[in-house]
Image 1: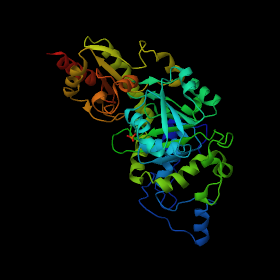
Image 2: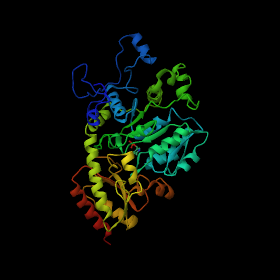
Image 3: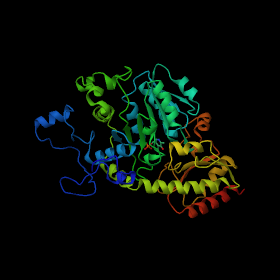
Length: 431
Ligand SMILES: *Cc1c(COP(=O)(O)O)cnc(C)c1O
């Protein structure tokens, strides 16, 4: 179908990017389980390899099933193009790859998924890249952290694990003033709750492993490009603006305009880094996306009810859900994620570390797993797992102190979830 801007989210999450299969008329998007695609003739092959014609060559670069998913996510986010990858972490590297070079840095929020803090504070150093972490509620600190070698600003829309909401408009204004692209990880919000591009984001990254797929079956990631950043203006982004020696001198920005980043990510990023999403994985995510809005509504409804209940429980010290009036982030909900603050938050127990361990061990419906954004309710004790590699200070700053448990509220019956939490809290409080 044409992606008419008049179609609503519920329609686009089912139809965007898809059309009846031209070969068979199949209504559901087929899983094109093929590595390669036959060229019409040698001229066709040459045109494809020269990027003069868009088409399928080899599934490390593009695959018809994955292409439908890319177009669907780009549409839902309001971007011009998207590239899917093998995981959310792969998507983050793919987002940075065209922008970064040895000696360059990014300015990143301290409130990030633990794995991202590790990726940015340790692993990217191997490429000669670095990250400076600052509190994104302190805009002066963000400004102060930017220097001549800064290439991008990075944050999460709703930050994992605490469910804190970033003031994207304010951060985008700082990025804009500095002439830098803003990269927003929208994993925990999804485009149903938050559309970062409307708040000034240049690129949006996703772990599609989470809510986008929504059933805990496959890992995946995606980078969506707004198409709005001028990669040639500053001379700071030679991979996109200057002649590319690995593509016989092609200038991506000049040649592909707003699609420069997307083309570069496929033609150079996937070609040479190979962090490709497979068509089976894309299929599961396409299935999940069809019900994204319905699921997110229930996640929000359940999270609101359960966070409110938890906040009143005697064993609970505090609850970080931004949907609660008590949250310092509550006044950002309406502006940044008007359909709700998501389904993810942390709960701090008065009994500290020991109570948290007993609590997660005594839950029945909630599973103790290193995942979030599933139809199932999940918990994890971040300090001993996802945020384990972080220093005490990093844990504190990320909202993953030893006395807190991260809760990802599923779409089960809220009454059953509350009863389960009540039993486990009683067990956690017993001596
Ligand atoms: C899970 C997660 C990631 C990493 O994604 P993977 O698919 O596990 O590689 C990145 N950011 C956030 C916010 C996440 O929750």
